[in-house]
Length: 149
Image (tube, rainbow, N blue to C red; front, side):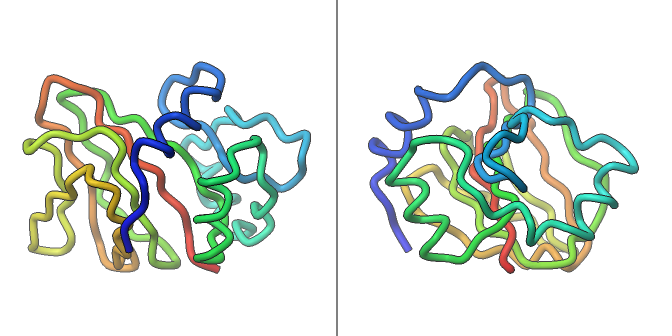
């Protein structure tokens, strides 16, 4: 599945500033899109993530992609240089659309290392297996990440 990355980037410029992640879908239209999900909050959100299906922004092209794939709890996620996430697994597969990346940004999926280029491709990733993401570059790694219902 390939989408027009320039349209996606143009729509993303309309979003407010965020540090690490901003929700593109929420549990209600008035939800704070920069609501933190830190530590134990992840467990609470994972139990109810199907409720996070309401578009929070007027970004019609992106919202169409989310609807097409029946995604929930979709976020724009920014990973700073020289960082990685903890080793974990999710309850469902995830759709990743890389927006900004570098050849030294990758996912570890089990024993496999995978780089996802930012070329408009939407990747279905089996994040039900243990995995992490690493940014070993000098630039921010930015992905749209949505959960399948």
